[in-house]
Structures are given as structure tokens and as C-alpha cells.
Length: 301
Image (cartoon, rainbow, N blue to C red; front, side, top):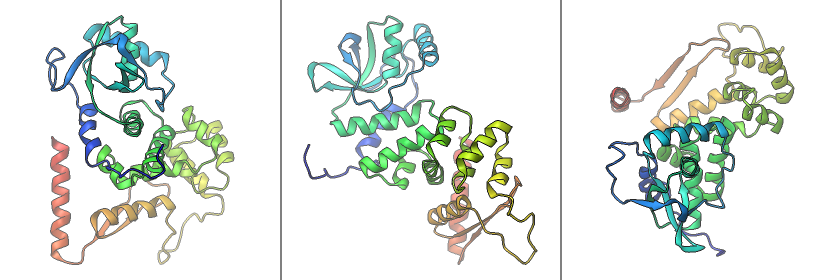
């Protein structure tokens, strides 16, 4: 492998175009192939030996196999020419579909063949796992961390390319600071991401996590427990309570996104709260109104 790092494409260019193939839903009937789609002999296809996700649950494969038997493979796989076998292909995205197609005894599968190097294949495999697999919060966070550490992507670029909010990515990444036994509880479904997030700043995260699981506490109860017995029940009206780390990070994310000062007022133990956006002139006010209009309009589509 060359010592110098190759120039980064970034998620905003070539990979985004490829992701359009991965993300596109069945806009047309399965019998009408999309542009560049081919039908490939399943015997010529091999899995990617560097696939970052090695576990495929029996239940999920059985469900997908049944669906393929009934409807066929609606969305094509993404392949590249196998670098170890010029007459074959290697899976870039869609290994679960390939495994299920074998179980369904299909001889051919629809696929899109792309020219990709090893780095791009691994990068896209991680992204496809994040986008499509039924990941728990820790697995999703680990995927983001891989993309950032191995490929130099920022939270902002990931958020833009993957259709996630930056705060969503930042909050999940903070979970990776928890002790491994707590992360195992999240992986096993004993703790939700909300439970785990409340424990991120606690020095007794593992002990509290076991108590939460044992007592079946809610997220709100977990938040109160994580604050500890020394936390005051209430504060005088003229005293501003300290905000937790997640609230401060969210304020920073929103402020950076809007380019304006954002303040979040959320009292512990309550569901409701308020968000204050401070604008310095009418131009900024117009910008806030425009962004809200665009967001609301997009939600109605």
C-alpha cells in the first residue's frame, strides 16, 4: 500500500452518485431494468472478504428469502469485477440479497457493476450497513467512527451524504465513550440508545446500567438516576441550572447550522421545553423563516 494518502474525493461527489444506486427504491416494476443494470450469473459472484459486517441473522435471511421467492430481487446489487478473478464479480453492496437469492435457488440476480478500488469498496460497504441493516445504536456509531477515522470524513459531510442530522451522528458517537459492558447491553437490546445517552457523563455508568436493567427504569428515570442524589430538587427562580453535556452540544450544533445563537431550555424530568433563536437583524429573521418553510414543505412531500 502506498505511504502517501490518496487525494480524498469526499462524500459529496463520486460516492454520492454511487449511493444513489444503493439508496434508490423500486421506482419502476422489477421487470423494467434501470440504467446500467445487468443480469449476472449468481455462480460468478463472490462476497467481499473485507465486508465489515459478518453477522447475518437467520431470521432476517429467512424473511428476505421468502420475499425473494415471491417477488424476486427488486433492488439490484452493487458489484465490481473481482480483482482476484477477472471473469467473476465481487459484492460491494447487497450480500444479504445474494445469500437469500442462493437460498431461493435463483440462478441470476440483477446488479449494477461499478469500477471501484479497495478503499471505495470498504467505504461504501460501511455506508450501506449504516443505511440498510437493522443496526443497534452502538453498531451505527461504530460505522460513523470508521468512516471518520479511516477516510477522514467530518460529521457535517456524513450528515449531508447520509441524510442524518449532525446532532444525531454526534450523539451516537458519544455513546462509544461508555464502558464496554454498557455497550454490550445496548448491543443486546437491554438498554436503549436513550438510556445509554443519559449515562455518557456518569462515572458510574456500568453500575447504573445494571440497576436500570434490573429495575426496568424508563429513560426519564435513568436521567434522574444519572444526576445522582446530590442534584437539587429545585433551584431558586434567579438561578440558572447547569445544562447537561448533550443539551450544550445540541445548542452548539444548531447554532453552527443556523449561524445564530440558539438556546435550549429543557428542565430535567419534563418532556416539554423551549428553543430560542436569537437573530441580530431582519435578514437573519428572514433566513430562519425561509429554512422553516423549506423544512415544513419537505415534510409534506
